Image 1 (spheres, rainbow, N blue to C red):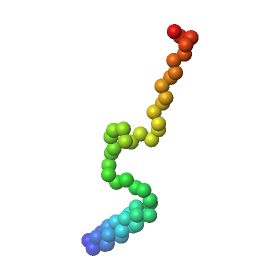
Image 2: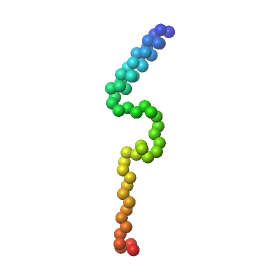
Image 3: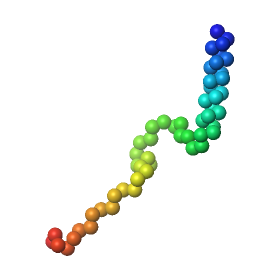
Image 4: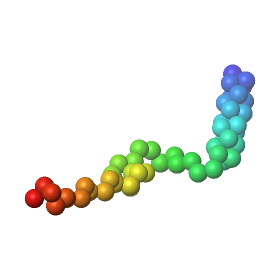
Length: 52
């Protein structure tokens, strides 16, 4: 039984070490809304004078 506790502690320590070295890691969950867009919105098409 104590081996399981020691194994869990080692695994948790290793996971925390890897996550701390990973840089910008966001652990806050799913994001919703306009703040998650990475691409700029497409520019609207220009109207041509020939179509008028």
